[in-house]
Image (cartoon, rainbow, N blue to C red):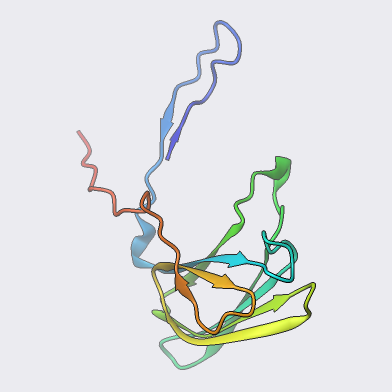
Length: 139
């Protein structure tokens, strides 16, 4: 991620920044929700992901779609960190307006998906900018 830092006033001596997130071998899932009866942006929808760890224990991860950060800078695509889990055993989406719940099972990790309210299946959510970056070597 490239960040232009500073420069707001003449004489500002901040430097631009380049961040690299190598991921450390952990797994993730990005979820884009599309409302049909609920609002199209799915604001207020709740996501519950149940993952099974290597030792067989399960844990639940919760997200609520919305403007959840300072100054409204939060993406409406929810990012779910899965740690070492390679799949999601169960993904549950609660839609606020229709008051319905959709449940999907055995979703592979390390992908972006789209779920439309009332749809029977998830579909891929293409993110062409999400490519594995080349290794950056120190000088």
